Image (cartoon, rainbow, N blue to C red; front, side, top):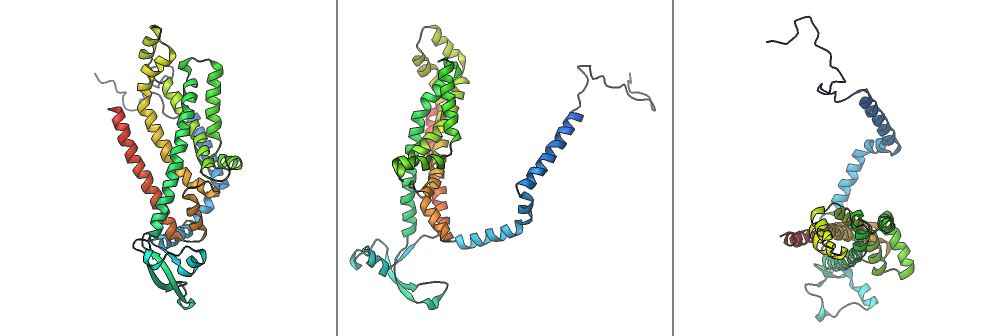
Length: 327
């Protein structure tokens, strides 16, 4: 039987109160909200100067090409004037030059050849070696910062989980301290700690640790709250202590994810430690700042390549460790 209306007749109107009637995906309210959001986005677009930046995009692209042209190829070798090294008392004897090093005569200013020439001690891999050594110091700082964060995040995460039932006051303290440490930027922490410990790796390590502990504490508390209640309740019903419940029923569930968080925090701390070096707390950041301020963009590209290679290596290593823990 054909239930379609005859030609010229309208279909039966949809009853909004009927639960089986199709719902409109967008109503007048949704359209009004969308229009209001578009207006707010337009106002914010202008307030942030994005309209002017859009006009300057061709100029910005030209500047980016200039940077790339000056940054490539990356600086690998290091050349230092022999005369300056002799004045500093750092010039090695001719028979004890570093491996692959040589002395050659070069222009004082490659852009202006008529400026004269001088003897330079050239090390083909000198600058790359310098960046690797500085990066090792940065990794050490990030590692110790991650270790501090892990030590602080464990109690914050445990007392900050509602399901552990330590009480409202410990819960509020754990969540509050985690939020406070996350809200304070590392650079501010580093400057404050530098007043206490002086400029050096200690201030950087503590700044990384205190800031990262807030993230790890929150992640751990959330994971503990999301664990399966079955094993936890079964152990608790036998009279097991909270420590035993934590060790047997909760840690195996949250450990693989916690290792992933540690991997992320370590990578993040390596990148952040590179920036903290700018304020004088050690690492490769100071070298990056000097190279950029002096317009030596080929050195900048070398530093960035070393940082990228370090983060990639840490990613591969940490993934292998995590896969073994999961298995």
